[in-house]
Amino acid sequence: MTEKGGQGGKAKKTKTRVSVITAILLASLCVMTALVSGKESAGSDSDKDPEGSVQVGLPAIADIFSDPVGQESVLDESTINCWGDSMTQGINGDGISYPDVLEQLTGIKTNNFGVAGENTLEIMQRSEDYGDQSNDILIIEMGDNGGWDSLPELIEQYQEMIEKSGCDRYIIITSTDDPDDPESIWYEPAEGLGISNTSYEQALLDAFGEHVFLARRYLLMNGLKLNGLKAGKQDYRRAFAGDISEKLRHTEIDNTHLNGYGYTAQATGVYAKGVELGYWPDTGAEIGLSTTEDMEGNFFTKRGFLTH
Image (cartoon, rainbow, N blue to C red; front, side, top):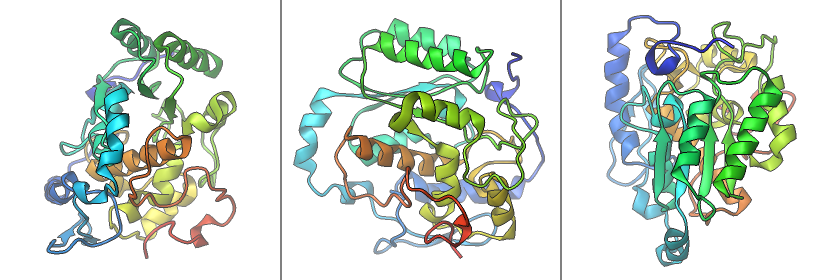
């Protein structure tokens, strides 16, 4: 399989929209010190997103811990190890990566082991070289840069990486690439895909079950609302096609990596999945719709899917 090239090994469609970058960078200052929640924190000013919708002020991270003392046993016992490529590293994220936000959400030390451009074989080797991770929590997002020739081979690579780490607590993050993007390694055009699973996503679900976090699906249902962003007609059209909102990417740079909003929402979904699996306590953070809730059918009418 041919690996992707360019920035982070995954460069795609590019355009120039400097004013959009500036506006998003300003808005990201709010996100970097905030938890993803729909509530407005006292004394916070509202910022504007690139299209003029309101970014709601969010409570400080420290405020979400209902019982900080109860975190100590978890903090002493484990670290969260996030393995992957540029998506884990946080390329194009306005200084935000999902592991950074996840550490704030869980209160557990989180290692960002993302390296831009790496394929699955390189990521697996780094994890093996790292050594025993039996006492840690493993989070893996890989495959966008190749290193595998078939879905069964990719699944075997995940299984080998988990086995060699000695870890039985793990989460696998699926790609957030647009399924109908012909430049994507996961290209699978399907009219009106919505939040239905692609064959790639279903294959991982069949192999790893509840350990799979369906990131594209989660961002479709929650990405805008969690960041206080308003959905427009284009967002609904993209959602119907199965593509996440362009407000969650820097599409003027490429069509793969997320921006600060996107990585923040992804971290929230991983946090929700970890709570569901019992890997860390529920700190009371707003998580949006469930990562496993059955939302098939006319999901546009479901409560909380997108802001109006």
